[in-house]
Image 1 (cartoon, rainbow, N blue to C red):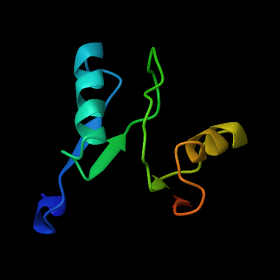
Image 2 (cartoon, helix red, strand yellow):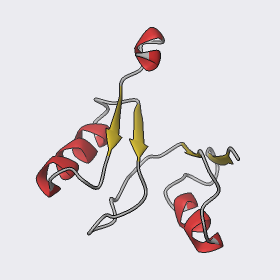
Image 3 (cartoon, helix red, strand yellow):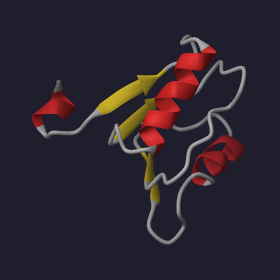
Length: 86
């Protein structure tokens, strides 16, 4: 509801979703159907692959440095940022 107030379309990607639905939602994100993709980070059988990610926002600190660094691999280094709220 909060995102709708600002005309932003978002979706939550959860590891509990069926594999075909996960791929479908990622596809719709890549073609611009969603402005924001919220990804819960634990329990995926296959790590979701994203393109054209501008920013990564962590709502808690990743448990390991490599997890933090891996989140940055999705970002265009010239235009993006990783922000962690603790």
